Image (tube, rainbow, N blue to C red; front, top):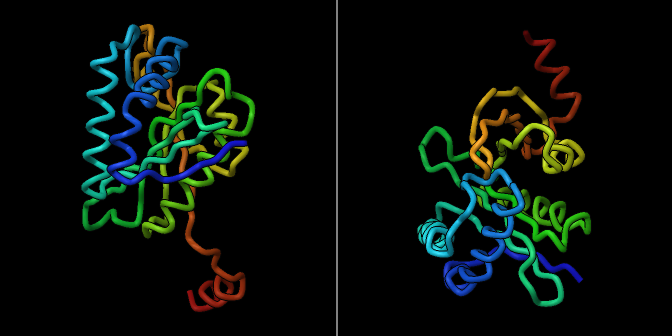
Length: 187
């Protein structure tokens, strides 16, 4: 059974080794998650320590998925701190263990991340992903809206330039149709 949860800073610190394993596996498998292969354990752990600090300061939400007691997935929500952006967040580093792919882990992680972002007062989320990635299909299926492509946006884990597609999702409560009509009539 898959369980998902948002980690506090103490739980995140305890999960650094497992998160590092997950990140290294993903990079070795070619995932586009900001790192170039081969990724050393020291680099992976340093990254996750930075995430722990961001969780501790309230800047980041860290969501994980466990399958039979083993960590098999993660995603983060960066909570934009600037005064004119406190309504939004950025989805970062959706990673699912190779053995757990196509089992609903990614979808569950995204659902929990979106709910946690809402609970943190965020009504608009953004993300980017490599064109053609499995994640791109997932985001479209989950109702994310693509807004454009930037060519040569990032390097793959092998070092090649790759294009990225950017998405957003509006989490704000729907405006009733009557309200929209009323506003249009006033215009």
